[in-house]
Image 1 (tube, rainbow, N blue to C red):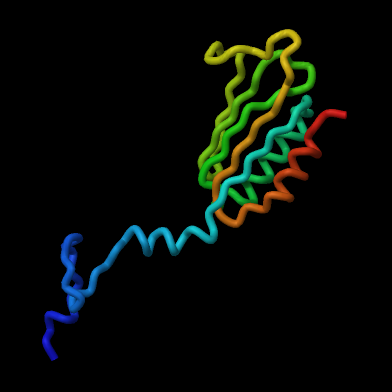
Image 2: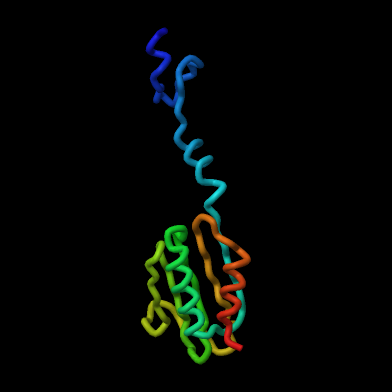
Length: 137
């Protein structure tokens, strides 16, 4: 057998059908597409700070390896400040409008919580229900 048939051709413009062409983008996409997803939650209302922190803490402890990116804007009951969080895997960083990087909630403004989770094996219903349970009654 001709050994040249057993090596990969890396010339993207090569049209020789006898060469083995490895297209990394296709394989990479095919390998991850069925697992990686994003879940967005938009919910009006004020959250209970303790319940929300406990829920997010539990989420990153249990699913941190599968959470590639998390971010959100939260409204906590009794606080005029916007609370922003962002995270990578198990690391979460919180900021508030008190820090001066973004404005607090304005008088009369609808208080809408917005969260985004990007990762693999995300359960949309579980995330929605978990966050809804954090709303203040």
